[in-house]
Length: 247
Ligand SMILES: Nc1ncnc2c1ncn2[C@@H]1O[C@H](COP(=O)(O)OP(=O)(O)O)[C@@H](O)[C@H]1O
Ligand SMILES: [Mg+2]
Image 1 (tube, rainbow, N blue to C red):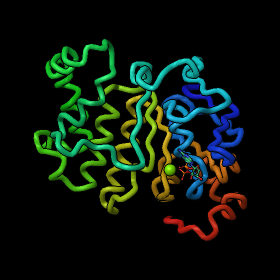
Image 2: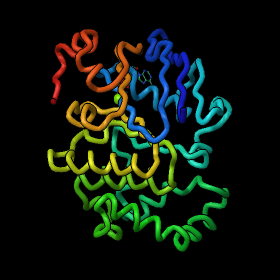
Image 3: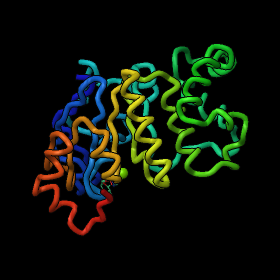
């Protein structure tokens, strides 16, 4: 297993946002994490990134991540994107992508940044080509549309060559053509040997590309299995009643 989530519990005051949640992410697979709004999905990602205190165990490649601070995760081979776009608008696309390397290796920011300009050019071009953003590398982010900035954020998460990538609603706000391209990109990421843990509301994306799915509601796991299994699970159908399902 690349990631084992064991009895993960997160409390915010009286609210139990994640309740004894357990699931495993297998190597080189796409694992979907779904559930209605407020189910606790983003909180799972924030626990992995040490942004919220949690109980239970998060085990990455047989290492308990409890001891490791947020900035060490990139070196361990874990990266993520955010549900709300996390872009520096007064920086170019290239600079925004290179931010993904800042906490890698040594801690000398200036030396690293200069060094990366030379050493990471190849990776920068590779990842930009994969994500179709090569023409925009020298453009300031403030001038670019949302769909392209989502790809810039994904490029930032990929340039560190992670083994596990966490995507929080990568399809949100994308148009149908962009969503189709996103599906192909995520499949390519998997083919590169990277394990993907993905939160996504668009059932067309999730059901089409996930190898396995874990379904949450009110912080708890209510179903798990292949896309075919979970979509026919009565508990899942009930949990989504009243929610719009895009299929
Ligand atoms: N930092 C926080 N402080 C207090 N409550 C939070 C915080 N983050 C999330 N929550 C609450 O935890 C629950 C789960 O939120 P979240 O993980 O964002 O859900 P999802 O991503 O599945 O929509 C929600 O009720 C939300 O309001
Ligand atoms: Mg969320």
